Length: 393
Image (cartoon, rainbow, N blue to C red; front, side, top):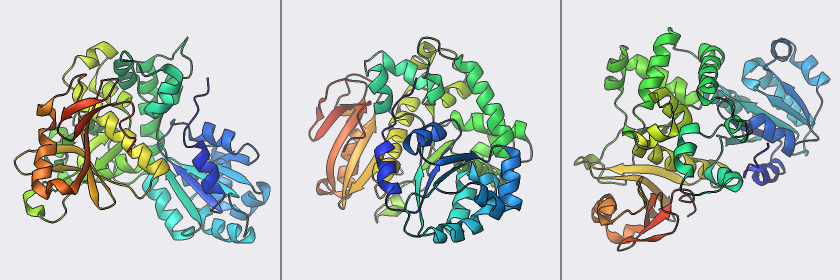
């Protein structure tokens, strides 16, 4: 079953403005399926096929002659030598926007080549799994959906056959094996895949926490330098999101390290060892995974619809914190994430501290993202809002 993706219209609009569109994101989030529908008249070629990747890398002119525009090239990172030819290729088709669509699942290496060869010619759109609004359009946003949604995750393949869903544990086991073999081996700085898998599991257990590289490396048995290199691999391959702290002046009293989130709560919960949705929802990590969900949904909203939108968290040295801070028109929107149906004024204490720190006039709006279905007032100037729709400003 095809689940409609909300970015489809934006893709068409952007393709009408740029010669090249680059869709980048982790494996299995639905990039290929989306492009096959949105750009149905384009030719399609995947460099996941070794022979095609070899031709594109070693004989790029022949490759481009065999695959004329308009063209979708999937997993283009497997032919880095192709990029310098794409610039000339696009120039020969000047005036034809949307003539080339690229996808890749290794963000940093891909973006280095795009920046070197296609700067000013390509629109880059980060892409992740299902948004909550996409999921809710098919399955409804009832209260019972939370445990299953967080536990199963956002990869479309896990929701495409509701009458006969794939075994979730087996699917993630295969996904991890493929990820380690296909993506991690192709990125620098990883010696032992077994140690790297342990590092990934340690990251999952730190969802929603301020990142301490030295502690993370110590827990896995690697140096802080190695931990930084491996964190770069996880970010580059679209498995981890790092949310930077907000500090507008007065920065000495604020936390400077980023917070760590996984791009998919299903993979995170599988790495944590949760075998059922019920054990996750009643377990000690449920609140962190709910926060992870809300932050990841806002990142989807930014990347798909408002790429200039700034997203941060705020935390002072005393531990007062706001999970998510947006800056819109020079003023802040403060968002707390609470896995509860009835948040109260205590859940808005971090927002009160933020207002006290920068002044009440600096905060334009504030709300608590929670599991309630209907909005209600939590405190003066703070509204509870459903975690299904919390990213609608």
